Image 1 (cartoon, rainbow, N blue to C red):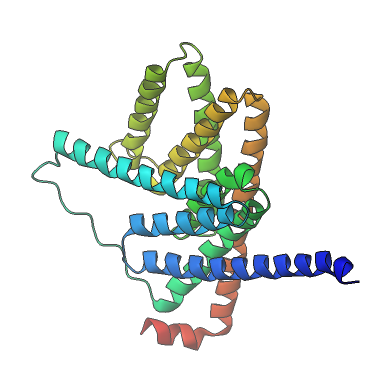
Image 2: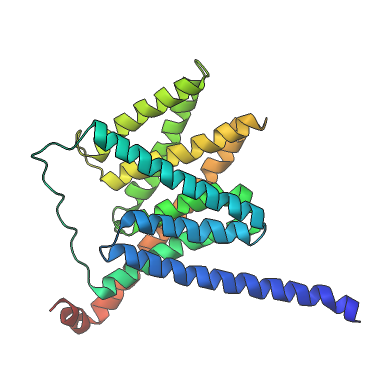
Length: 286
């Protein structure tokens, strides 16, 4: 009887551990997003969100995989800091450059609401990563990007900003891949990435103004990089690149649609709550 009860107890223990881990991660995501929206460093908040989701998801199944994620994050952070230092040394800011305008201050209630919305956007992809971290790690990275973008997106522009940037990132990845096929070489990969980065940077920094926000172009660039990185790995492993890309892009679209739905539903619920409680909203603004 004891031997038969062991698998059932182990399954209950694993279920309790998964529920406890998801609860801790949900609380951690809420606190980190709230930390980032209180005027703290956005870069630090980004690394904290990525580390909290990807490391915990990988460590839940394989400690060696979690260690590889930690090493990759550290290497990426050091490489990014080195590249930023060299680029600022080669191309310093003009003397007459004006400092960026300070971000508008948000009330405590609004910060908590946006942080909760961002955490809910990230959680489904994290739960998928608990099942198979190696397969769903790109989806987790995409959901983290969407969670950050949802903090500056309203229900009115959610479809255009979130879904539009995802589709544009997929289109850019397709164009990049076929352009790279003309001459497959590591240097050509670098040059094509430099060209695409410069073109999107013009939009990102407002050198070529348009109707879309900088977050739209940043999300497009991040989506393109994630898709290209996975396609390169699929090609090196001998997998069907086009089938894997189609499945991955479909998952990206599903995650983005979920993010749009969360923004729309939570914003509508908040508007109804404020409409039914006009005195409390007036008190918070005074």
